[in-house]
Image (cartoon, rainbow, N blue to C red; front, side, top):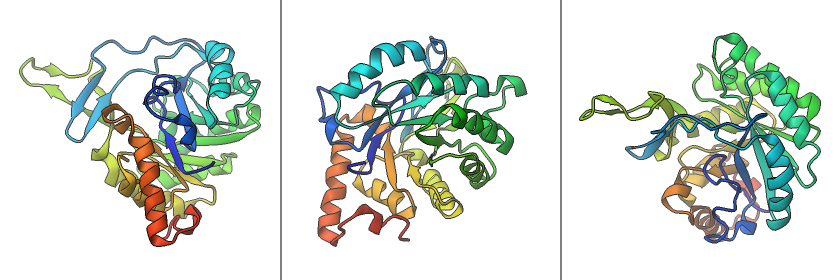
Length: 290
């Protein structure tokens, strides 16, 4: 990539929603919203709620399905934007993931996918693939058989030891891991005496989760040999540099895109300023430096 700044899946649409606001070509890459085998309408409203220093979401992977993404959206945005386009994929079974990956492999100009293993495993009582070594391994193994290019695995923080899952993904052929996905949380409207989300619980993101994400990136970077991509509450250059110094070769910006659509460019400028002040010629000089 031309630089380490990317957008996080689900917070940037397909890039088209932001192209009148920022110069997307400046970024190292954009990760488009989660794509599944079939179209999904998502969960009932309300499915987003603001929380202190963050937000809860239970959107439910609303997307038009892989055929529409592959046939109509990707051919357009891979030509429009002069940066890396990465598709985040999800599924209910390992076979679902593999089919989505296989369909995307036929798209010209798509060099990488990010596999979301935080999805429920319908064959194992709904427990997320990413919460067990066996579950994570089964998905990565299936995708690796059908996807020939760069394979990023997005890890769930809702586990006892995230390094176990990272090592399992690496062993099955992942080229990189990204972390963390959202933490499981909830909020209650006390006046109405009901949960603020239709699903009761949802994914917590934003600056509130940054210390947890930073710790997990630091642990994972020491546990695997493949590159680590850090995300979780990054809102400015300082927080991005913290992840890089903890071991992340690149970072993703998510929730902050909602509060300030210029965040990605501001972070990129801030990193450049830091490197000039500190005499850093390449980001790799400070990756994992602590």
